[in-house]
Image (cartoon, rainbow, N blue to C red; front, side, top):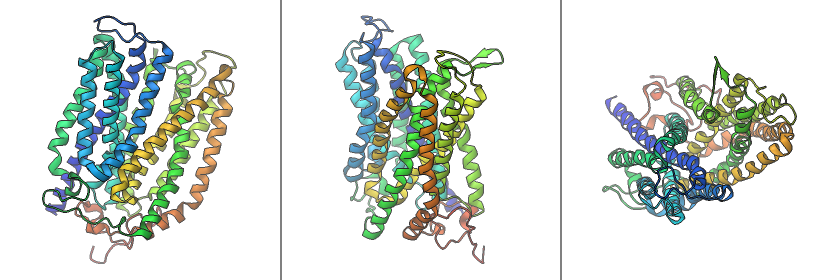
Length: 492
């Protein structure tokens, strides 16, 4: 048992280092998103610590939007390069280094130059494009065919993303107020520098097949054959299943975008939620931390519950997890519409929504997010050929970016004419998305069976399995369906 235990510890340490780097990548992204518009409209200080570019609000919004589009669009290009030419581990290390160089450019460059700003933004966005799509591929590689631990690892990985998203703008804002924009830009870069060092040190923990360039031997070990790429019928089925589940993912992303990505819920939380708690009024900016805070708390609880199910041989299929997450997210959008009914017509501010109800709606959305987004990341690494995985991850980010633009227009419609369209926008969008998810729920057993049939694997063949499932023998353990008990071997 010593060897499997050592393998599990190595995998855990490797994933922890990768997740730490992802935390700082998200802290970098969200810090810049929070600071960009403020920096662009701040008056030129000619050497002062709080000075900016002195641009108009319209120009500031354009810069922020263009950076967001770069950060979500470039991963498709760099994900393809990582799959075919660079390699996943090398893409992550190179991306971390480029992000650090972008933050250094912001800190040491001319703070009154738009050229310096755009150079830095392109560097950070390019680093994100290299690192972001390759990260899930590394997380998956540590656990091989152990689907239970791989799915759990993705949930904790996603939790680290939200810790970075929660801490990034909060700390950057505090630093900016007290020390100026230059130090606020630098802080996430310093964390990324530490993560870069840890990534380099983690190289011996990374599976050999992920260390080098695709198709070449690394450390004397040639790249093994890809059973999915080498089996055309299986590859076609898997790509079809990925496309099918991509539709479910985008329906969830639509619900999420209308709820949290269009700024409508942020405006409601600021103006219409009773933020008084025991005589203290919660700052409006702190309402942005509700979602990541719930995810950070809910993830270990959800992972614990799923681990208990895994020990009983009832670990839910990825399709079922995504369907349940979609249902919860659609319910969150409808709930927000129901809460918006209490807002007086034309009122600019009225604390008529209870804080617990508003947080409850966010809880539905946050738990749904944990059951959809990281699960689909894991599904990609499960079904896509090895040299297409980062490309798929990048395509997901691009689709989210495009959908985010669309949902911003939906949110603008909801808030038009004093917000008279809020209720109908939330309820109609939520119900429409819910109808699609219900259709997926009806066909989910068929989708699960197709995935199982074409992707068989034996969990007992993987040395990183835990003691609690080593004795389990499954005819097809790759994707055990929920409610199906696993049979144990006679000698277990």
